[in-house]
Image (cartoon, rainbow, N blue to C red):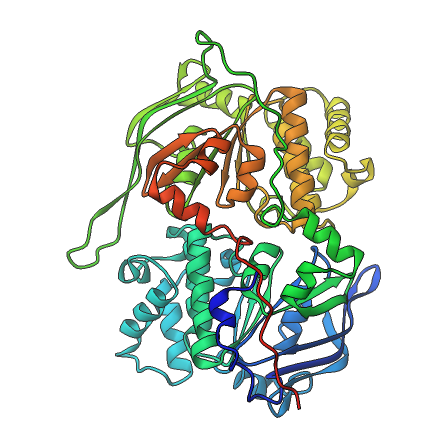
Length: 564
């Protein structure tokens, strides 16, 4: 499923006799209290100019460690134990720190996965991009601000001049990720290492970013090492695919060949778990159609939310993030809100949970108007409506044990005593398929999938009627993603909980939702059952979203690279 545009020009790589990046026998380990952990073991990997090489695998497979080892950006307890990392004439594994600084940013750009921790929270976005341009002598102090806006625009950030004056916390997750991409491409490097660069992005913005990376490979010969858990993206965009498991490369070769005839059992398992590469099967059983006289659990009427914008010339002073939104959600059902980053879906969910005040409109919860709820009424809503955050790494208090994390809502609402709370925590861990021994562990000791299961257990502690799932699987690899979606469906069947499911991944939504509301620029442009919406969409924007789902391109063999 490699993009046709990337393979229509067979001359790419034909005159190149040496890879831009050659990794041979790379081994990386981490020192921990429990001893040394071997994260990468004997990895061989080549990246050629003008090509995209994708590295895929489950969480903990060693793919991100491999990417970070290239520029020696491992954590303090990590070390390269063996192997070479040749980039042009240099072995990056043995360069001094001073020599590495001339390579990082200028010749190798890195797009980290998490924009929350990678952007400086006290500096404006434009200043952070301008800093890169100035450091590498690509702009003066006077010209850097305008150049930074141009780079942000190239990275697909809308209203780049306005965004340049904002701070990271004022942007959506997808916008922050695009700001990171702008920083990585500012110096027009020869190699871009993109570590899950689109995991926080909706499909249309995802396509814009990947199209841009694709143009870089075609027009200037830039090489891209793409680390991703989304096999649909790898299938669409990469000429070569590297599959990693438990620190080793289990399969590597042209993307078309591996997808058409995977040789390793682990590769076959990954392909079977990828929602965008397989025929979507509904995980959530069809919910009973509510009777006409049955009141909805949640009813949103003409909801509006406006935010003030920083001054930028004659630009607008306010942003209408939610604009006349209306929908209903019944018990035992899942309503998915989908749309681009900044479409208003997360803001809508925050309004429903009363984590933000609406500018106008009405929110009814189980027949009670909670639009302006305060005090005891808000506390009652908190008891009956819970939230699962997008990032399982940031949503759990690192100081708490897992037992404390899960029982915290029970303590806050004074439910039961210590013994009964621990009993409830054990029941919840069993329900999310984690062993009881997990209660004594800390979040840092768990994988991403395990942390998200803990977050689900915590959300269910008070037996809520509504759970808002804000991108609950976007940070997870495909096999863990499949397990979490199955778990959510099973819990809904057993308890009748309603889900307000926010996602930019339409392949996931098709499997989990009973109703889908498509949002654009703060408005609901289309709403209906997933089968109807996916097969007979009425709005052109819905068609655009469906066309951007990765994994749907026709597979084409990659152009051969001359190695003689």
